[in-house]
Image (cartoon, rainbow, N blue to C red):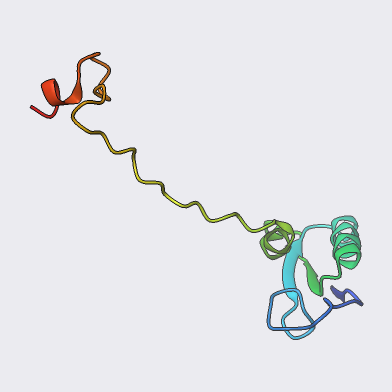
Length: 101
């Protein structure tokens, strides 16, 4: 049995969860299918739900749509150590007399 939600995302586009590219999920029970349909309708996600009791549940496409994107992490350069700074190794000596030697 397959069911389709009635609402698409505003603005359309080629993203997953739109009318053109609905998210496809697989669940084991009708109750779980209703839960997924309700959730998708609340968020305006177009979805096709397949009920297959002998298969493992797969709602990864809906989870991917609902999960906010992770921010990009910019790697900072380590602080520059000059000869008169204390050594970063923790010895307590000046860098020029410790690790730079």
